Amino acid sequence: MEWFIGIVLLVLVLASIKVIDQYERGVMLTLGKYTGTKQPGLRIIVPVIQRIIKVDVRSTPIDVPKQEIITKDNVTAAVDAVVYIRAVNAEKAVLETTNYVLATSQFAQAALRDVTGNVDLDDLLSKREEISQQIKKIVDSQTDQWGVDVETVRIQNIELPQELKRAMAKQAEAERDRRATIINAEGEKVAAQNLADAAATFSRTPGALNLRTLATLERISTEPSQKTMMLFPVELIDALRGTTNVIAADGKDIKK
Image (cartoon, rainbow, N blue to C red; front, side, top):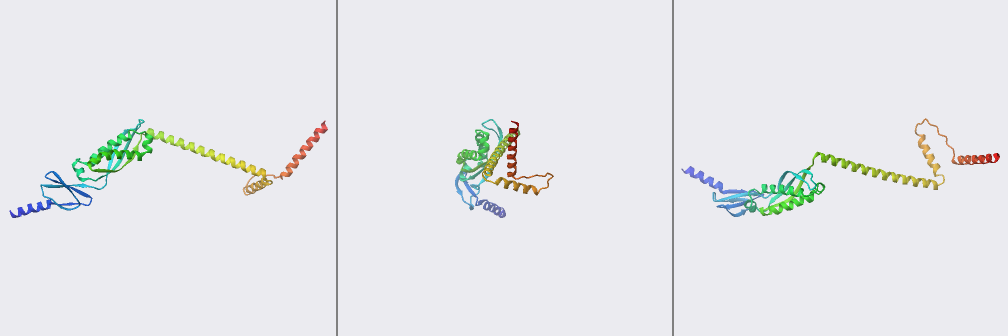
């Protein structure tokens, strides 16, 4: 009999000792009534009469499952997100909802569908941060009464139909081609202007064209070629041109 009483006492002693970790808070209920929140450490309770419900107060990520949505411009897409929450009021997290993590997840799903369904596809793709902040504001206003703070909301993946992906790829390719054409045209314009400036400089500088010709010949001479080039001074060509004109004029006078 004594050993039985000893076992019962040992069980009661062990049941009365509770250890609350540093990242937890203990919500104490006495005869089912809230009687305080215990901080981390070793705590003694009265078995059967009292009990402690531990609440994790660390930042907790919640994966919001993929949601099928229809955007404002009638495009079907699948969107998922992640929500980071923290229990800042342990007693509310226990007394106001049966499971604050599940409740927050369900409400975040509804908010995700509502917000993304009221924007165009272009805004959904380009304004993720702004849309995430809208979702955070909506969810945070609801979870505040549960003692839960929504730290951040991030939209992760946006899946589009394959037909739309192909159309967007073609549009992007056409845009790249257009930019390339514009860049090439601008380059040709600059090159033409530079050639015009060079020609004007050659025309204003005596002998510049001859030097350019000699430089070209020097470059050509280093390359094997089957062609033979005959070079004449410009002055000789001008003299021959003048002589030809004189002979032609004399011939006309003789015929007359």
